[in-house]
Image (tube, rainbow, N blue to C red; front, side, top):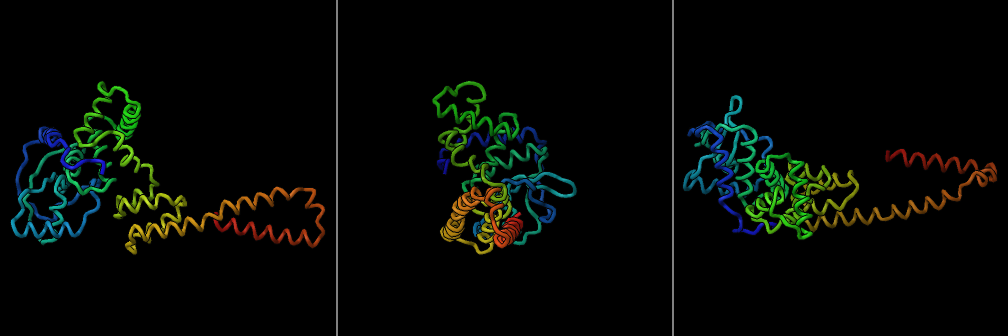
Length: 304
């Protein structure tokens, strides 16, 4: 982990959520029909451990719901702002109505509230963590996601060079990461932000299909996009362990090693095919060469 448990400045979360609450009209309390509530489409937390949801459901069944969920009105229903694990546990229990705080927030405020709540938990996967941190950076610095990534990269470079981080945006970024509990900006960059360099199909599988980070890290070594997508499907369908997936990737990698050698062999033959040599071939050899060229053309057409 890039964060150390217990080092997070909890007042930071209070400050950020306080800003959201100040921007919102006073929250209303209500018992809302469960069927009227829906999760946010761009929720940072996209994968949930079913066993932990069942454990939470058992706890709620025993002692009740200790903390209401937070929602905002959206269209004809209510969008979850905070408390999706509780929401899922209540669905598991079959509750018809949910004690809720109803707040008035715009999209940016709702996103910030969700990011803060999720980052405050220890079981986010690394990609969810990256998305939550970048969202908080955007809000705190008043910038875009792309610019937030650029700032993190710049501050990381200054940090590695031992430069002064006490002024301007560099100080803001470094201070924010310290309050979030990171040992350095570089630790976040190296162990988390680097995930965004993974192929898009892997990021989508992590975000929407529940592919574990440990398995995505293995699959990132597969450079052939079609082969990688096939391995993602296999890993998810067969619930492969990391070791099993390593074995699949190893077989794939070893089977592809002949490609550079084959290309070199092809190049060596190609250099020998000159106009003069072709003209020197007898009729039978020219016919044979035409057949071989046709077969070669068909082979390459099959992979276009």
